[in-house]
Image 1 (cartoon, helix red, strand yellow):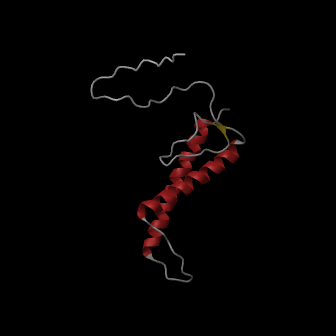
Image 2: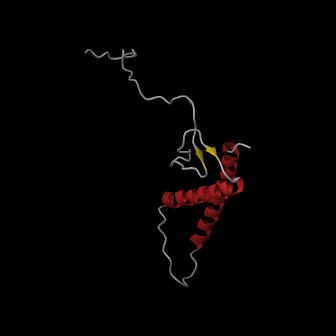
Image 3: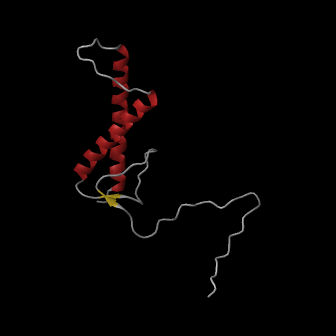
Length: 120
């Protein structure tokens, strides 16, 4: 029995073939909560958020806020320790304010994401 191999696509000299994204075909992922890659993009195939919209929004806001604040800490190398009744470090308030701004921005992003991925 002989096997046939598909013909290879010709490429220009010096170029190599690479993976290309497949166009959306067929089904998509229906989820209650997104799994998000490190760059912030959904880790599902054309996701659609399903279920109670208020619960989905609350979960997505919490998820996005925690990821945004965590990313700031990783970026700054902040490990953080807790000492009971220690005097407040002035740099801490700056970090608290930075966290609040990141969390607020993440909440807005979560609202936009839920709105764009939920069908009415």
